[in-house]
Length: 583
Image (cartoon, rainbow, N blue to C red; front, top):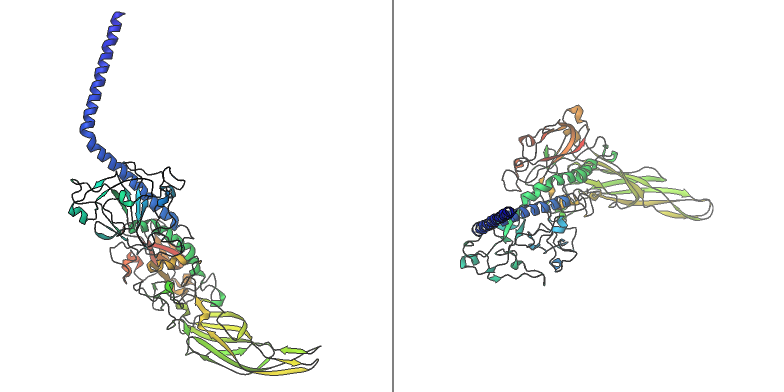
């Protein structure tokens, strides 16, 4: 048995020797290799974490854009509220602020809880920080429905390494705290002398986490001259660009156009009042395609396709540049006569005439009436229903709805017809009915009375053709987000000629329906009208511009025929065709 014991001792000694060798070798490897590998591993960890955080921010933007009640598709979340940064952690740690920094750049820790991700620690054990540019986040609490004006033309407001408009947000792994003693060259690049201290009390100062980043000046950096020999920054940054945000949200925006804009457009002139029907609607003429930021958005009979005819009669901030109150585009036709006639009642008309100005039709009517009472004495009044007819220009070249509120001199006012058609093209023949404010006379029981009323006056302002909500929405309207954020400036509009004013409203028979050619699927035929969300520029051209090819990305979509291509979305094509109405 002794030999077995000695053998075990030799085995244990060999194992111990092997362990010493392995540990020694590992220690040598750690001493020699780890400093390099540690930096690589830390940067790889941070890079992966930053990518995941970026995806989460873009995912939040998509989810927000899909909310039909949110007026700002494309906006980004605010950082975590600084007051949530406490020790021990508060219940609201990682929750975004509802609004942030007003018109300035906002900075704070990444709102990881609001983004639905785990708490993101970088390789130094610090939570990721987040910077969001002006105009891309909710600025204050006093105007919660204020539109930011974000659309596919929007640019980044953050400069990066001196390049303007480079990004809309940045996510930063702050790294370990540093003692900054910048050289003159580094100071010129925005680095300031500072010994960073990090404490949960009071709320953190961004300067103790983000080095050489000019947050107030909306200017960030990824590299500093001489940083390898005199370290003044260890921030690891990933940026989010305007193009990346729009690439994420444009598909959702197209869906919102389909659900809240297209139905209103389809129903606008689709009733018997307008001389059409829900199954055979009319659509207003497109406005010619010009620079969308300068267009008056007035429809034209010469336009095959173009911009939505969003000219408005009411001027306010929302309609700036496309309001026509000074020289009304939709106006009464002064070259066409108007008339007023009695259409029943107990009146005998002795005279009637109308004058027509661009802003109002004014009619006078003289009549006599008689009535008699039965029973006790009292007061007798006559009922005098009348009809005013006139013609208004350019109704079919704008977006209008009908309102009886502006009419004066009548009660129980109604508009049974505003038929779009005839000459001039795009005009509407309108009839307004109501009951005149009549005279009265006292009578004795059983005895008749009669009276005469001279020059009863009725005024029908052009404002009976009120702005449609698509052209001039209230903040509560379903399409408010569309015009308030100027998505109409990146939206193209085309109608089959048969469904324009004066058309036969049967493009199948006329063979001029619109066709949407799909990539890898059967084409969609017999479309009455379409809109195309042009999306962000893919040809590198500056926008806004007056060149259609800077917006629509296929020759098929700019060749003025009735066929449009819906290709696969990619780097060179991002048109999204929305069918407004079809057979």
